[in-house]
Length: 334
Ligand code: ADP
Image (cartoon, rainbow, N blue to C red; front, side):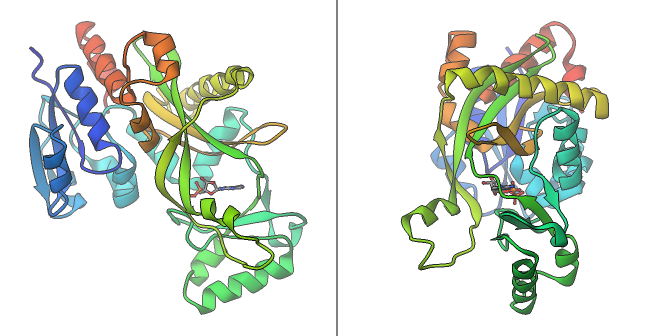
């Protein structure tokens, strides 16, 4: 019987992570902010619920030798670079989280992988539709779309006067070509044990208010899009797109190994937009994404690979079990 404990923070994709770990025979533990534990009582996937007063408390926990922590978006969003200080052994390469967090590095890795990213502009170069992003804007609050330097400057001063951004944010504004395509988020898993990159599912995010704007005529209402994710929808890709989607995952793993050896381990995602001509990537994530919870019972793609109900969380558990069997667990943890 396996006595290893799989733990995570109670939010994001915790239900799936803990359920998948249980399916593979591990004990489970969830770290919850006080007041948020009710969900994990109603869905009993955690054998142990630890209450925290703040996520900072996670950093002070003594490392246990029988616990593996599965990082997800909340760790990065709430602790930023301090997430790297967590003492509990983490599944995957913590260095990847660092590359994910810093927007310039994030794009650098995608470019190193030869994946097309949106073109960047200086204000005086704006000659087509661009999206303007600000640092740390989770969910894109404050982002705006414009198509000339004059419009850019007007919107920046509006944002400054109504306090939506600081002068520092304005200086760091990132101006990107607006990519007119449909978004797709493939869920990859780099298996060190099987020496391969698996694509286990795809989702698209349901973002407010961006996904609500199509209901209004934009001629009558000028509303800035925001991209706060409120849910995820399942998606399969047109089959002829799959080879390129798979190659993007392979190339990202190779590029990451060159830039921060051993690179990306376990789950990762490429946030892409498919235009009529090509695939363009906005960002990569170095850990499990929330959309994987759609496939708690497996996706069409995981079915083709495993012929059993293989969620991303269960896949993590399977990799850990196989690594333990080969005495290679250390290779998967940082
Ligand atoms: P955040 O880091 O705040 O999540 P992102 O840079 O990932 O911000 O952008 C959030 C969303 O904005 C993306 O999921 C996508 O829908 C949209 N987006 C980002 N960059 C572009 C772009 N260059 N063109 C069109 N849409 C974009």
